[in-house]
Amino acid sequence: MITRRLLEVGKRRGYNIRISSVRPGRRESHESPDLSLFIDVFNHAHSLKSLGAWRTFGDRFLNELMERGPFVHLMTAYADVCNLPYLPCSGQRLNGCPMKPALPLWKKGLFRDWSDDCFAKRTLVSRLFEQAALAVYLSPLHRRITESLLSGVKHPPTFILRPLIDTRRFYNEGLERDIDYLFVGVIGEAKGLAAMRERFGHTDIHLIGRCAPGVKLDFGRYLGPLPYEEIPRYMNRAKHFVFLPRWPEPQGRVVAEAALCGCEITGNDNIGALSFEADLSDPSFYAGAEEEFWITLEKLVR
Image (cartoon, rainbow, N blue to C red):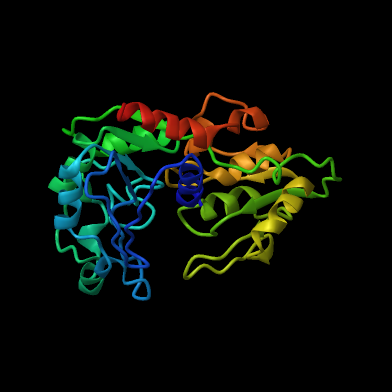
């Protein structure tokens, strides 16, 4: 959603944008680009079905692009510093990866990674950050966690992208709030399933979203995955929005959406949206975020 929205606004501002992508596989590039935008460069396999590790840009392609001219590096999660799902170390890596040594051989093959080292130690990862004209993060928390994983790497200038949210869709409609607690998102370990069960297992909490593999809900009222268009109505009916992630959520736009709809947020320190020094329920906080991004990029090539 973030990538699509930024590119839409960039095209509207008159830029000639060419896109290379892993899925679908395509290569479209300018001979001498004014600027290259790298977004979630690495595409990791998290399941046999996805086969992500086999669908990749390749080091040669990335190195050639980095040598053509200035580039900006944007991450929407932690894929460019960790090749495991949901950053299992939560950004607290000390010596090596806490998870890789315990992975079975078939999973190491799936990840195409036989090392126990942290992915962030790879030379290409260092290049992506050290040589970038700008590193773009989704929140102050996202920047802090990523930089903490890149020990010994020289950090480029940074830009924090505010949440890109349609405030015409997410707003307080003044409805009767007949739902005490609501959660929306992937229901699984990284998103705080254990904490929700412990704190709200005795309540009539409503849960919307898909369950992660192996998860069987034994509390609350499960409404299943619902169309995105229906989410604002449920947020407007909820008194409290619950989000207690284990991993450092890069942004957690769903929290911002809930705040705009008038929910009281029950969260923790692992939510990127809450690391902004801003009132998330104020629509003016989100105004012009896409334009601010492109204006910042324009200054790099003047």
